[in-house]
Image 1 (spheres, rainbow, N blue to C red):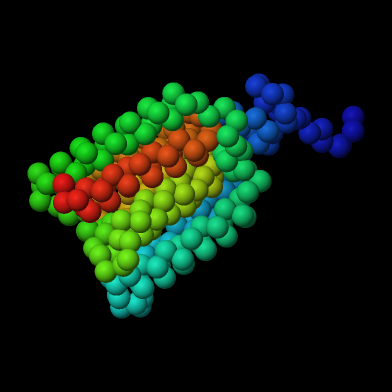
Image 2: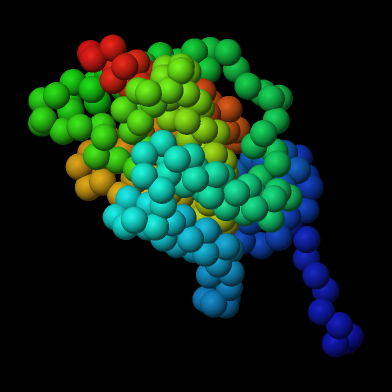
Length: 253
């Protein structure tokens, strides 16, 4: 008998494309696969290395921005921290592009799900706004919701929309429901990746009280990503939610 090991290829049950043991999603069709048990426990942490590096880099720069004088004051500081976090996110997105590019396809995006997501985001923002009033909490107790910083600009609502609604909707979804979720799903079931990524998303905002609403929001967007293999629903819902918060602050609702 030959001593040469025969490699057994496992095929995706949806499109029959081969995939590696341990993959949670097919890299061709994007459908969820059954996570196979690993013989080498140490291999479990291989997909998490870039995720851990990204997350701790992000936490570090956000903590420096919020709790120290390392960044400029006011609007200038917010612009600088936004640019820094965008550069970090883009770098890690490029590194993981091979496993996440399918998430940016418009193929299969359904208008009905998009409409429900937008409607849910609007309702969710109203509920959170009422909750903040009830517990006497402020949206300003957060790294990103600083609408007052734009008060002296020529177009405060426009700039607040770009910086607080559009930028996080794109880059937080790319990071937390993109490569971070994908890496987590390679070592555990997709539903577990939903809860872990949602909790990490909430912690990243560096506000304990905000976890009350940020974790459920993170769960909703992560579940949309898991169920439909796209980031577009999460991006749309994230933008609408943040934009409504901006409007509540801007008009004093």
